[in-house]
Image (cartoon, rainbow, N blue to C red):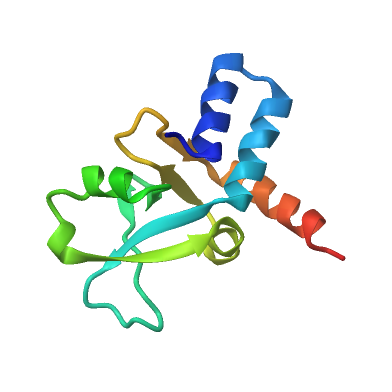
Length: 130
């Protein structure tokens, strides 16, 4: 069964550019809980997340379910641990110029570019400013 975030992504893609549906994706991302692969032997208090690099682009693989993670990580499952973070905490901790690769290999795969991440950060600030 798809998560709220997966459903929102599907609806936004089907709409081909409806801003309200794009904003719904961002809100669902903020509310979601994520599973992030980390280096197996990194310190538990400051885990080292896995980054993927393609040319000059840096991607952070992030998953909405263990099944999506397991499908992607089948070949490296003995070399990784996982970190669970809320969308808010993920947005707080992600560096500049990082792309989030959500659910790699799944039908709901989506890349969030740095501009989208900045937009979601500004939404978090507005939501939690009081």
